[in-house]
Image 1 (cartoon, rainbow, N blue to C red):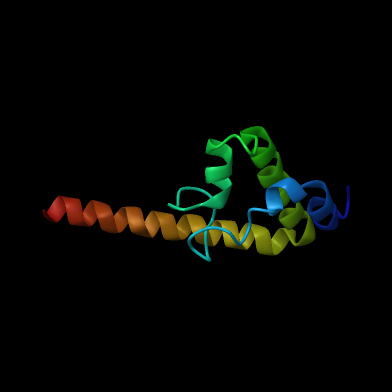
Image 2 (cartoon, helix red, strand yellow):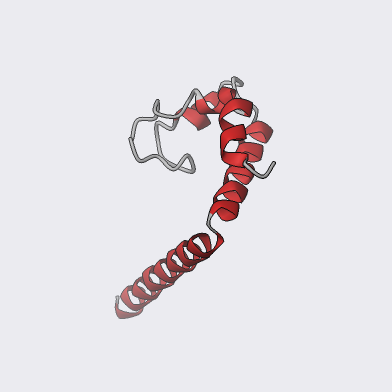
Length: 95
């Protein structure tokens, strides 16, 4: 499983068939309306457990390929979330 990226393409064709079919081109498959993945799950065409397995393995693959960059991106993401929360708190306090 060292080369996980190549194996995901072959092992999860049932999941990847929905990529590119979402309403929005930059869909993250989390909460966007018109997400083909979640539509397939709701319709019973794709198992939620299968989707979760794919997500976890994909995350592991990204981490394994470039640990330093993965951690830097993760830190950047959480810093942005903290900034947004701080801005919201300021706004609510001044309201």
